[in-house]
Every structure is written in structure tokens, then in C-alpha cells.
Amino acid sequence: MKKLLLVYIVLIGTLMAYLYMVFVKEDNSALLDEPEGLHGTLDEKYVMVNFLAGIDYWKNGLKGFEDAAEALGVSVEYRGSTQYDVQEEVMVLEQVIARSPAGIAVSAIDSEALNPAINKAVEAGIPVVMFDADAPRSKAYSYIGTNNYNAGVTAARKMAELTGGAGKVGVITLPNQLNHQERTRGFEETLEKEFPDLQLIGIADGKGDQMISEQKVRDLLGRFPDLSGIFVTEANGGVGAGNAILRLNKLDQVKIISFDTDKGTLDMVKSGTISATLAQGTWNMGYWSLMQLFHLRNRIVNPMSQDKGDSSIPPLPTNIDTGITVVTPDDVDQFYAK
Image (cartoon, rainbow, N blue to C red; front, side):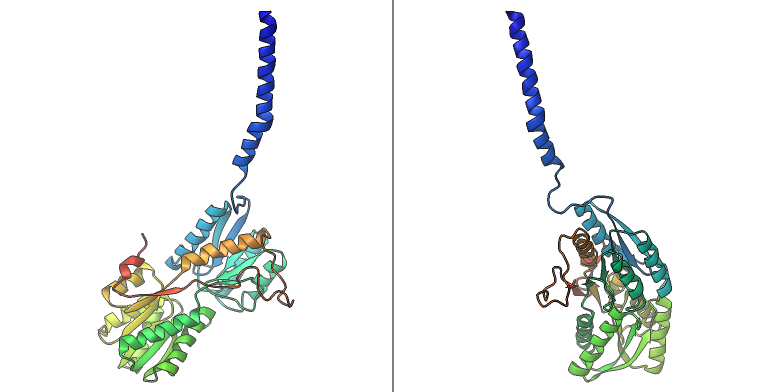
């Protein structure tokens, strides 16, 4: 009798264990394995492509790209031309396309030169978004970055505040790059409309280089010794302009407005060599670039033809303004990397 009871107990225990494995454990495993929200795989590799790849400016944007990748469970890579060279960036982009990544975020050194490569990627089914510097006539889905015309407007108004609204000012820029063209245009047109006593006397190509920008400022001061201010549309040139006015002993005369928040620029703002700089939302550029690429790649949204009458509202924003902040000596400490 005891043996029969023992057999029943064993059989019942075995049945209970089987039912637990089939119904309870499998259900719990499914819940554990199922990712919450948006989630991809490490096999999905997204690539960020830019130029002058080693400069500090890109670090915060790449951090945003990486933070988005961590949130989504995908992988990312960073590629770019080592020099300020159009053909090198085109070559790098072509190499990236040949590897068929899940998507590409591109900052264009030239608003036209990269269009054939960008279009090639899109036609091959690789989502492309632009960040920081646009290529508006390409087939890239969107632009994520600063409203550069408005940044130029902001710089002009700050320059008027610093100079008392009168005097001679110059611009050091990168004339072939669309975002810098827009910054310069916003600055120039605002001076004409709002501050007629501020005269723009020259626009020079600093080539994104400290030494060249320093020489351009020296040239401007040689021709206009009473120069009151300089707007520099990128960070390396801002440091070069600061070096020029220090070496020429013009610190009290010439007000400099620069761009971005690399350490060299912030140090000059803190010392008063640069009167103000414009901080961009670079982390946002990287983060939202990858988020858009992920949505496009995984067809979470389906881009609609802009030719159709019912598609006036795109499923994802095609232009995202990541904003700017004016940084002065009063608040510069907040912008150093932590």
C-alpha cells in the first residue's frame, strides 16, 4: 500500500513539474525576453559621418548618438574625413555605403558635393539624415541641427549690445559650407535692418584653421585699425581671432563673438578675450539623428510621398531645430565638460 502511495506521489509530482515547465516558466521566460518599447539588435549598425573627425566639436554629438544606441540596443560607428577636404568626405561616405549599414547620419562639408553619394545610399534603401550641416537638395530624409540663420541674427544683436550699436565689424567664416553661409547671412541682414550704424567691412575665409583665422583678423585690423568687432562662425577661427587681438594688444577695442563650446573657446570666454560664444545643441543632434534613423530603418513610420495631397504632414519631422544659447563670462563655467 505504501509503495502504491509512493508511486502516486511521484506521478503527481512529475505531472505538476511538467505543467509548471509548460505553462508557467515558458510564460515568464517570454515576458523576460520581450524587450520593452523600442528595441533593436546589435547587428543593426548605424554610422555617423562628418569631416575634421578629430576635433573636439564632434564629441558631444557622438555621445548623443551613442546614448541613443544604448537605449535602442543597436551598435554605432564613427567615420569622417581627417582634413577639411570635400573629396575625402565623399570617399569616406562611399566606403560606408558599400558596407550597407542600417542607416547613416551625415554632416556635409559642402551642401552640394555629397548629394550623389547621399542619393545613392537612399536609393539603395539605406536611411540617411543630415545633422549639423545640411545638404538640402539631396534625398536625405531630414535635417537635425541649429537654425543657423537665427543664430546669425542672435550674434548680430549681441554684437550691437557689446559695441553700443556702432562701429566696424568683420566676419571670419567657411564660405562654402551651408550652415556657415546661413550664419553669415543672418548676421549681415540683421545689421542692415536693425543696426545701420554697425558697418560690415569684410568677410574672410578662415578655413576652420586657427592660424589662418588669426592672419585674416590681422589683415582686417591692418586695413581697418578702428575695427570694433568680429563674428567668427566656428570654434577654431574664434580661438585664432582671440590670439590675434591679444598679440596686437586690441583686447579692449575688439569684441569677438564665436561659436561652440570647445575648451579653447570657453577658456577665452572665461578670460574675456572672447566676449561671447554660441553653444549649439550638439548632443541633441546625435541623439535624434539615431532615433530618426531607427524609426526609418524599422518602418515604425512609413515616409509618405510629398507629392500626394494627403501627405502634407510628414510622419517624422523633416527639420529639427536643436537650439542655441549665448555663453558669456557670467555663465561660462556651466558649459565645461563634466
